Every structure is written in structure tokens, then in C-alpha cells.
Length: 488
Image 1 (tube, rainbow, N blue to C red):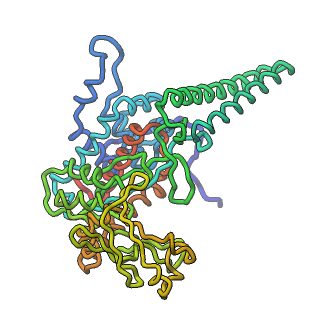
Image 2 (cartoon, rainbow, N blue to C red):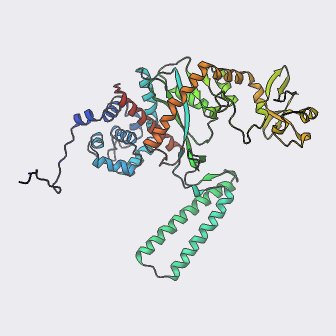
Image 3 (cartoon, helix red, strand yellow):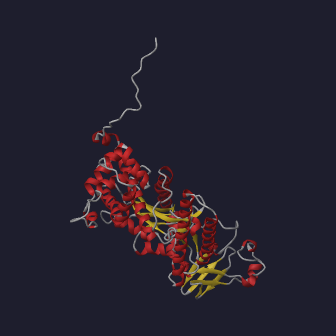
């Protein structure tokens, strides 16, 4: 006898029940976002930007939209079209949206309209977490990662390159127009050709506006820009490729690994971002903390940053190079001796160096070279010829008459504090503190970029990208709160 089965009907109409209590009980992330937005986000800043008090339709409720956005970002969903889709088929998002569906274009308009208010939510969250004791400022790790911009790599260049691009676009337009005249086109082909012409005309207009700015001396002739996103700069990504992008910075605490600071820069180097990031962390603190240790990698090392820490009594841990002892990164040629291997010292008005060959050299004044000040040290050629290290010494061995060592002015002026930093990092305690940096922050970028797929920003302009990055960081903190079961 055959077994019996329940009736199975695929084509029936489904009536789904959304039970708020069950949703909140089964999804801690929904509960955390729902409660936090309700309790800690004020509508005042959003209401001030509306002018529909007397006329006009009602605006999207900010709390509803924020809950949906942060839940989507925390789930690795960043595009407005995908967020719109989730509002119609994901029970968690349906609950947070109050069974409302917002068009993708209105989602974008909401973000564009409330850039500052959304950024402020991150700062308020850090403040509240600190006040509640979930963030400790004993140790802060700071680092940055490169995020691709929503920009066409091929639409990057300087004035000369764009003049060539403009000529090529004009040739393409002319060719299309000639083919259109010579051939009979059906309706679909005509529409396709019209779209293509419109695209080329739009590109041509952008190039003409850029070249006009160059002619008016608003932009330098040699400056490289991307006309899809003019704020984006060419940067080397983690995979080694070079693309238009942004430098996204973050700071993290050592207690529960919450993100405590965030910002976006169009500068590929981290060298000028140490002090802004430290100030960003301090800005969101519940109270002033003394003795906070800030750990940053060698990419942030400059004499100015070390001096900044010294002047403001900030306990910095920044190695001068990428070696364990703080030494410089590997040379282009192995075992090559450069000025970085020389021992520097100060004797009153005199500046002294001693090379690895044990030859001492003296300089009294600095010389300007391409906008920078250098001390020039000329070795004794007779000593150099008999030196065992001559073959490895930088420069051409057979041109001793041109040989000299150039040392930056700032290296001597900050010699004491740089040596102090090196001693601190080579000590057992200092090395242990600095080694915590990688454990705290490196995995966060991996989680955000690889696991939650935020390796590219879909918005253009540094202000919008800055808002999106703050939303990503806020979403990360929401996930952390859900994992830890934090109730504020």
C-alpha cells in the first residue's frame, strides 16, 4: 500500500503574517536597530529641512527609512534598487518599514537630502556607547582602506588627454550620423542610435566644461581628474590595481572593538590623516580621556605627526618603517647603503652624520631644493675609495666627485622625538601595545569589504561617499551590538 501525503498546492494565494514580537525575538539585529533609532534619533534635524508644513504631500518618515537603510547595510545590501526590492519580499525589512515600500529614486533622494543628519547618527552612537561603558579609550587603533569610486577608469586624464578624447568622440558622433543618413533604420535601431548619440554628447559636454575650467586657470593643465566623479582620485587598491577611489579611514577601541571614528579623504596617502582622525575620535567621546594610546601603521609616519603628538601630549605609537624594529622598508636593491643608514646627531649649530663606513661629516646650514630644505654632507673621497662598503654605497662608485648625502631639515629638527618614538616601539611594552593594532582593525576592513561586499561605493562626490562610509561604520556597530546583546 502506498504512503499518504498532505495536499501540496503551489499556485494558491498566500497570506503571510508578520508578527513583530517573533521578528524581534528571532533577529537580534532588527531589535537593536529598531530600539536604537526609536530611542536615540531625533526628528528635529530632519524636520528643519522640510517645507511642507502648509502645502505639499507628507514626507517619508525618517525613522522608518533609517531603520531600513541601516538593516540593509548591515546585511550587505547597498544599492537603492535592492533595498526597494527587500521592502517588498523580506519580512524583517517589511516590519522595519511598517509595510511601506519606497521607490529606489526616493531612497537616493532621502540620503542626498540628509547627508549631515545621517553622519551625525554615527557620532551620537559612539557617544552613547561610551557613556554606557561599552567603549574604552585606553587604546585606539587607526587605519585606512581604499574603496573604489563609482567612476569610469577610462574617463580619467589631464587636459591634453581629454582634448584627444574630445576629438575621438566628435569623430564617433560624425561617423554615426553619416551611417544614419546612408542607411534606413527601423524604430528600435533608431532608438538605440539616439541613446548612443546622447551618451557621446553628454561625455563631450563634460570634457568641454573641464577644458573651459583649465582655460580659466581654475584647474591646472597637468592635473589628473576623473570626469565621472571629479572628487575621486587614482589610488592603488589592495589587489594592486589602480582605479579612481577614496581613502576610507576608521578608528576602533580595544574593549569591544566598536568603531569610534570615521572619515573619507581623497588623498591616497595616510601621512596627513593622523591628526584629523585623532580629532575625529576625540570629538565623539563622552568625556575627555587622558592617556589614550593611539596606534597607527608606518604609512602615517611623518615628523609633523610625531611633533603633533608631542605638542598635544598624545601617546602615539607609529613606527618609522615597516620592519619590526621600526626600520625602513626594503630597498630597491638589497644591502644598498643610503642616508637612512647614517647616524644623525646635533652639536649646537652643527649637524652631523656618521655613515656605516664610520666616516663623520658636518653641515652648518640648510639648502632649499624643490621647495624642501636639506642639509648637504660631502664625504672625504680619499676615505671613500678605501672603504669596504663602497660597492654597496648609494650612487655611482666611479663618480665620487658628485657624491653627497642629503638629509631633510625636519629630520634633524625632530631627531629627539623620533628617537624617542623608536625607543618606545622597540621596548617590550611598546611593541606589545603596537602589535595589538593589527588584531583590532585589520579584520574589520576584511569583514566590511569581503564578507559584506563593500568594496565599491555607488554614490559620487566626497560628501556622499563620506555619508555612505559613516552608514557602513554605523551598520558595523549595530552588528556588534546585536552579537554582544547590548541594550542601551
